[in-house]
Image 1 (tube, one colour):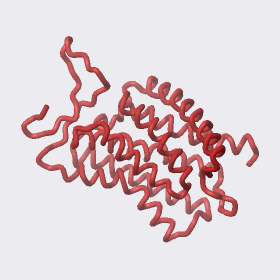
Image 2 (cartoon, rainbow, N blue to C red; image 1 turned 45 degrees about the horizontal axis):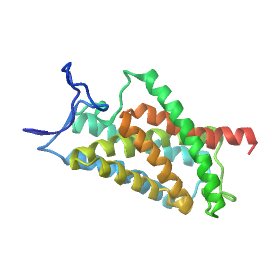
Image 3 (cartoon, rainbow, N blue to C red; image 1 turned 90 degrees about the vertical axis):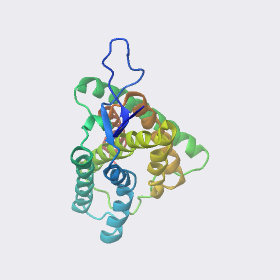
Length: 248
């Protein structure tokens, strides 16, 4: 359905006899000016991997806590830029990318059980890939290890930035522009997985599968807070809690 001056993403139904079949967002993309949406998509799909590669090329591999913190601070600035584009350039509410706080308790609970699912699948993938001889993760034997506090900041950035970029903004805008749920889910997922190329083939496969779970969840519930919560908790358990427990 197309309005005279806007492409409808989806609108919240208010009629008693028109119950929505799926979670909805009440927003429109101005059809006369799609420039902010295309700029936002470029940032959402490519800014993180391009910036991370550029930052590493300029500063070298991780060698200090402050270097890592500087990188993550810049990543958070990219998140702020994208949110500014949504609010001030597209003139849309943050609910247009699934970011809503009026159901915070439900979102956090959803995020908790989704994190459990992601962790369980992660363990299964690790065992499966190991069985077929595929290495999973970067070889960090001689690489600098940031403090666990700095790792926590990195995990928080990953959960916030990657979910806002690859799930919330990219999925909503691509679905609106193309009218295809398949393309809206598959394009960001593929770019998200390939951007983890430094983790090898096993890493790309694992990220594609785990990202697919996060993508499917978002497309069902349109609940970005839940996605962010699950992403952060899963990364936190794997990269902070386990090293603490194992003494590594």
